[in-house]
Image (tube, rainbow, N blue to C red):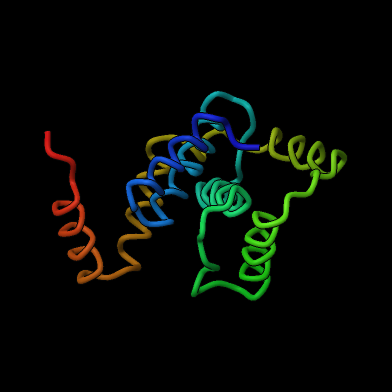
Length: 145
């Protein structure tokens, strides 16, 4: 279950009309914080991001399944979205097993270097025009200081 502060930040983003990916980013940030605090680990920054986006979908953020990605990943995203629409009590045994598995994973996946590497890799895959458009939108939608 996401922290109350994370849910509040995501709802605030939704009220301000920010995109679902921005709302989902709050959950990803929470996940990186959990790893840094030592609550659990992750095998890679990508896994931490996936966990955060899964939590966002289950919390009701309208994030669609990824356009690129395997069928199983898209299916999992659709399951998460559906779970966000109908609340079910999570399986206690499965939750504990997942938590214990993550506790055995590395904490280095949330290091500044790992996150930077992941961000650069993601930006490089998107191409120059997408990066330029993102920068222009950031400049346009930036809060006035």
